Length: 147
Image (cartoon, rainbow, N blue to C red; front, side, top):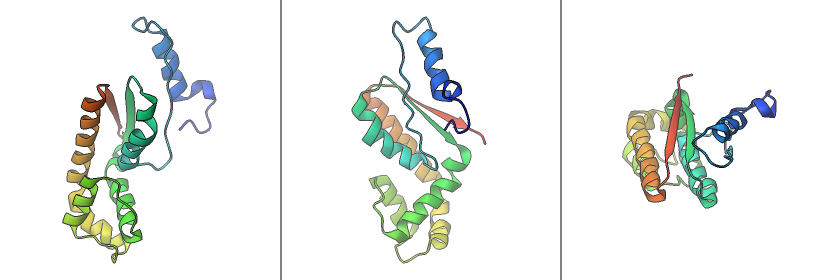
């Protein structure tokens, strides 16, 4: 996020300068940071669809930590189920339906029901990213951080 770091030292700014200086690029590169604290891969996928794609980027870099990819992903999804909130994607609705989690469950029960479907959910997210990469014809790079 760049919290507590001067703008010139943020990851996005440093990446922008590095890529702009690279001999492979004939023009300056602009790096736009769409990071939002607490977003899991599901919210990042939504952000790509809603905020990034309309800008017609040449590439997309997604970074995620292992906790965001697994435990936090399930916890955030489990909080949406009892709240009756839209789950956003058909593959998410399918996972929730298969898990048996319902709006009548509190988030603890929903987590317990969803946890066995974590791998299916993660695989579906990556499949959705791959589909977007093919349809947009731009590289989507996922940086997995072991934190």
